[in-house]
Length: 117
Image 1 (cartoon, rainbow, N blue to C red):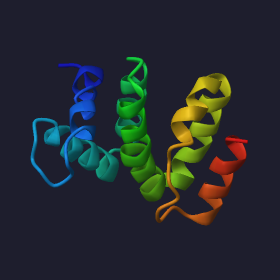
Image 2 (cartoon, rainbow, N blue to C red; image 1 turned 30 degrees about the horizontal axis):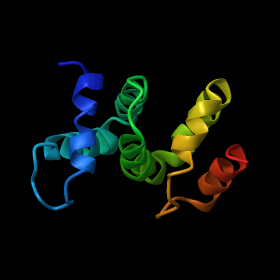
Image 3 (cartoon, rainbow, N blue to C red; image 1 turned 180 degrees about the vertical axis):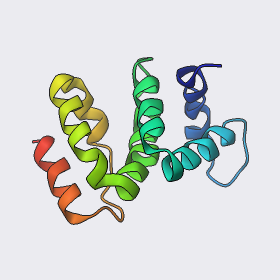
């Protein structure tokens, strides 16, 4: 199964209650493992899901989930890549506007906010 196909089941997770181990729970667990250990692969996973033209719920789930978690854990490493991607694909701004600050470093948050203006 491809990452993009697997990632689409985040839509299922996004529609379930967090904490209930519904059918999409494995994608949540897999994304957290990728984020913790393999940020480059996690970034590729997020981009593959976004290439499937997901609906708004899935985009919001990605933003407030894996993307936010990536920025909290690996923000200084990834922010340049995010800035480049959003400049090349301005339609991604809407996805990144759904990212919350959470425990993100202030400098990473400031760069993201500047990018989204």
